[in-house]
Image 1 (cartoon, one colour):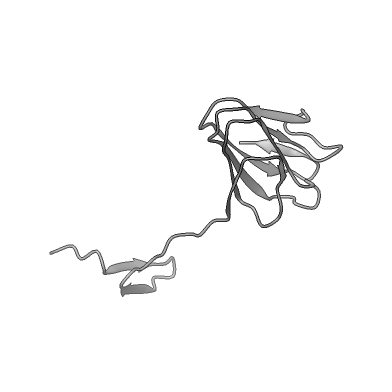
Image 2 (cartoon, helix red, strand yellow; image 1 turned 30 degrees about the vertical axis):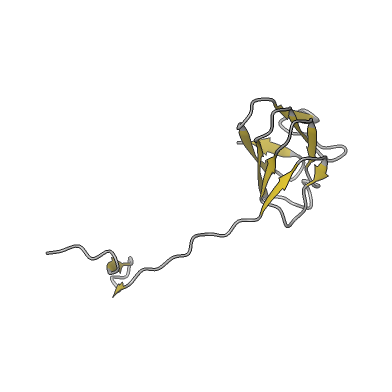
Length: 117
């Protein structure tokens, strides 16, 4: 028996099988690089903070964006501050600082604020 990476056989719980080529282009993600203060929008998914000056990234309203995830990474050399919308919090605080270069966080809207994962 030889391995052919272009052929794959799979079966589901009902016992139906499929044999054929598997192709994928990968998932395309919404990516934005920022070097100045910004507010995340519904079109964002991954925000990368670059540059050498401090930047604040403000999250959108957690109530309107319940169960929405955002990834924020600090690739710059200064502190990147993630701020909650007015009256909301990030794990109990108004802001969260990403002070280490290449550190990243993922936040999810829990309906009243944001949780870090």
